[in-house]
Image (cartoon, rainbow, N blue to C red; front, side, top):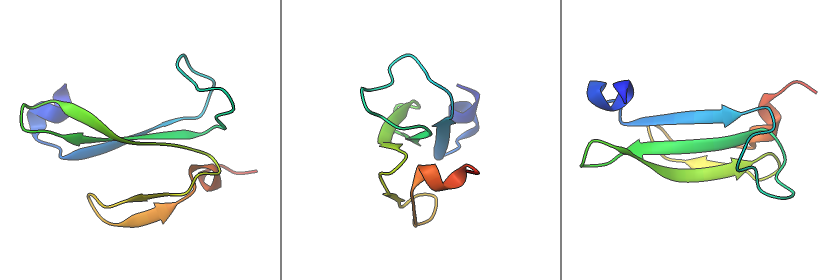
Length: 72
């Protein structure tokens, strides 16, 4: 809510531990990306688990596998 009030256009959240709503077979970490929409709330734009490379275009274009972000 504070991000929306500040006008932050996008944010990413990474779940690195098991969580409620984790899909069967979904590997951690899971990226959730959100974008601020016109009504002042966030809309989820991406959900990407480890092993599933994702391309995000905002706030800049980047492609990565969420699983590559954690040390092995």
